[in-house]
Length: 88
Image 1 (cartoon, rainbow, N blue to C red):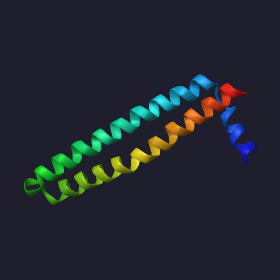
Image 2 (image 1 turned 180 degrees about the vertical axis):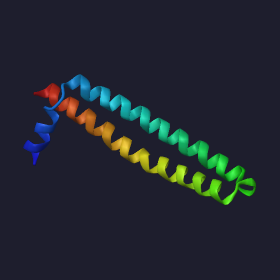
Image 3 (image 1 turned 30 degrees about the horizontal axis):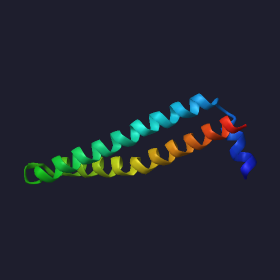
């Protein structure tokens, strides 16, 4: 299993893995900001929203909250791959 992960890490140079980690960090922050904004707008305007707007607000909040751990894992994996490339 370690050989398979090492072959994935050898796919890109170390600096590309760091760029991937940076982009994942930006996506992580954007996901949190989007979730916070959509939940605050959804909660404060709940009574005046139509049923369709409520579904859209709930969907946006859930999708952005689901994206946060995905970007976190991708960023950490990119850092590990960059460290692996630099050590070998």
